[in-house]
Amino acid sequence: MSKSTSSAPSLAGKVALITGGSTGIGLAAALLFQREGAHVIITGQNADNLAAARAALGEQALVLKADSRIVADHARVADEIRTRFGGLDVAFLNAGVARFAPIEAGDEAFYEDMMATNVKGVVFGVQALSPLLRAGASVIVTTSVVDSKGVPNAAIYSATKGAVAALVRSLAVELAPRGIRVNSLSPGPIDTPIYGKLGLPADAVAGFQASMTAQVPLRRFGTGDEVAQAALFLAGPGAAYVTGIELPVDGGLGIA
Ligand SMILES: NC(=O)c1ccc[n+]([C@@H]2O[C@H](COP(=O)([O-])OP(=O)(O)OC[C@H]3O[C@@H](n4cnc5c(N)ncnc54)[C@H](OP(=O)(O)O)[C@@H]3O)[C@@H](O)[C@H]2O)c1
Image (cartoon, rainbow, N blue to C red):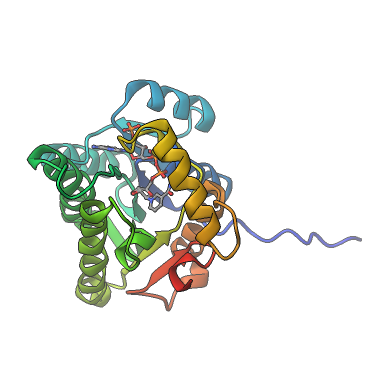
């Protein structure tokens, strides 16, 4: 009799939230986590993107409209998860925005919006979800290669990612007594819709992408799925003794 060579899904029966799960890296992770047996919850704010994600994920996914800048939205998401599932095994705090501009051009609204989405969203997301996290749970935060590598026009964005990278290290120590692991995932240039939202003219975006490609040792952009695979590692049992790290998924850009 032939023996099956396929291994058990690594997230079988686990409950996994992916914030910013409607497009890009988050949607790739939601699809992968679902294939690996997880009950998936995603958040996002744009109704059209959420509808497209719903179509991709199917009825079994819980799709929630929630703005990561709004503290009450985190409480609502946590309440919904508590009611439906009673607890949470994976919290992938991935929602984020990147806007690029010279330092002289970034006004207060530019700063406030990125800080609110990328930093406040993670702080109050973890705060709301913490009571739901089961022993053995994994918290993953998306940072960026720009938190350790200088990139022109990305100073404020870099500052938001540096802030959450530091947050992760303290949270890892604070939540370790409960058996909860906290890690960050640091993508390099990944081909997602984010490049259409940088706030730069199309030719400047194209120039930036070409310059990034030339600097990446692997000489290409990564894919959302390649980042999702790293998130799956951090989420699953293979990373049971891994906490407080920042895992680069950047084609080597961070060390180039
Ligand atoms: N792509 C890259 O090269 C790269 C590199 C380094 C780090 N990252 C980081 O990776 C993460 C995912 O980015 P991505 O590249 O996959 O970009 P993306 O396709 O633009 O995805 C961003 C996700 O975040 C959600 N989001 C944005 N603002 C939100 C808010 N206020 N409330 C709730 N959800 C919000 C978006 O939902 P809506 O559509 O509803 O707004 C979307 O689901 C971000 O944290 C980004 O900073 C990306």
